[in-house]
Amino acid sequence: MKADLININEKLSLFSDHWHPRIVGELNGQHVKLAKLLGEFVWHKHDDEDELFYVIKGELKMEFRDKTIMIHENEFLIVPRGVEHRPVAEKEVSVMLFEPASTVNTGNNPGELTREKIEKI
Image (cartoon, rainbow, N blue to C red; front, side):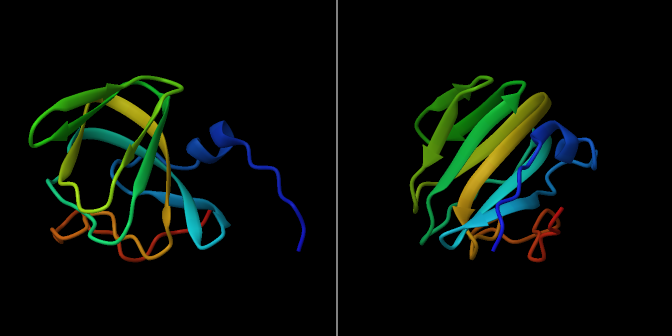
């Protein structure tokens, strides 16, 4: 197996839609994904997976039932498994996600934003 260098900006330039993550790498049963976010996502939780949200560009508001955390560029937040949350992007945000390969983006709240098949770019 060979090591591949990934240019994040190059990968982000390949798509413009929102709430549709793309896989850019895999390691130890984890997916590394890039996504562009805009607007409000759905309230959801993941019973078996933690999620890491790393903000590349912009600001992401992560709402929890008891608080809200702002994630700025070059900051990340780990949402523990079982914790209900809702990402909100008032302006477009580019994020990198680290999560188990089994993670479905809408967790326990499937709907029109659910992406069960994630494209690898």
